[in-house]
Length: 121
Image 1: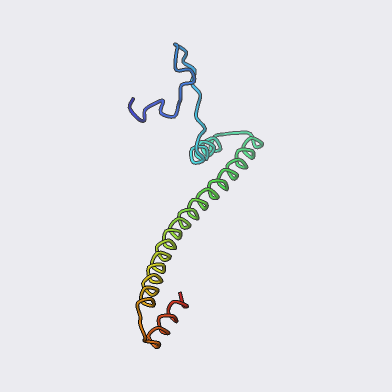
Image 2: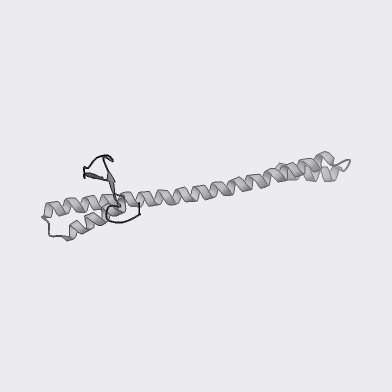
């Protein structure tokens, strides 16, 4: 079935049979905002216009919240990846210093220096 077209936003309620009744999918916020904006531009009674403007403001606030949360989620995931790699680097460093400390024989000055580096990590 080709994408797009006249009925791209429609979904068949009953796939079997000759019935032609379709159910609209729930519109994303952007489409709802555009639709309400078009309705507001028409000549409407003041109370209907006010209700539509209130609904439009609410939808815009919801969309702003959704966008902000998406950005925060993206930043969180990026930071989580960075923390993971930093932790891996530190763990490798600790293992290397512990190995040096085990293999170091007799050099108390060198052993103290390695111990100091380990305590920093």
